[in-house]
Length: 339
Image (cartoon, rainbow, N blue to C red; front, top):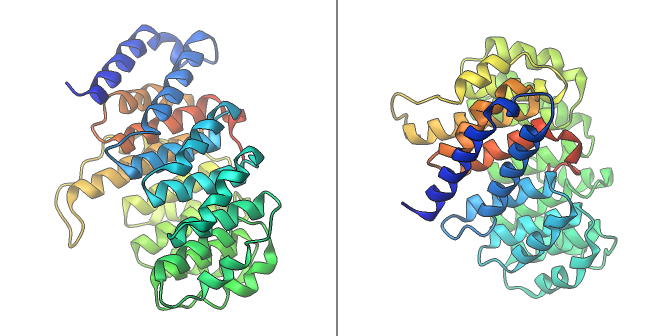
């Protein structure tokens, strides 16, 4: 038995002990479940087998952890993966962790463009704008599409609507990743045009475009889009689109998609689609179902989410379940959302 599975089995044994109290309104059962969920996130923060899992755990901890998690996030600035370092720097900037300034500044000297971009953005959020010019430089660096995507992403996290004028220059770029990041950032910065484009994509786009648009508009937590979310929950052809609509509804205070999300925790795709294996379809739906239940916040989902956290074979699903449990049990712990 691997160490990972051993940890999960131990968590499962603990869950049996407190099963009666975990779904209650309060008490030791709720506290123990929340602590196990936090332990799951901490376990995967240094997980050597998957950088994606480390990023997911880090972003989850950054959003819902207390200040005691900040040293672990700072440590991730030295991770071997550029993606983890990027996520760590952005998280520390949004958490306004001034203790990390010196370490973040070291990333400016990195040969990795993503390190420099994350450092510039994080320092900007911490009040140091000396390197902010790098963001525009990389946004228009036509020789590096990855850097352009990273820069567009970071601009949306700075909270400065004036950046929309810069982002508007790349929102129609040929690279779909750059277009998506620019559109998302502009919407987050209040662009009416970007929001209107996202609404149009909900009705006129392909399945992935619909899901993306619903995800971005849901994160805005703006009740004016509630009718749109309800309509897509009822009428969308694809399950992922329905779940994205259900999650968006949860983010504006509606539990309309609860039953769909709960039933989708056990979803299994029947066949491979073109360039989309069944295993990937299964993963996406289950992960989306968990995050939807977290957004809705209904405690009837606690036991099924505990089962996923304890027993799922994919670490990313364990992390998604753990984060959803914390969202349900301790919504007040959530820090500034890692949008």
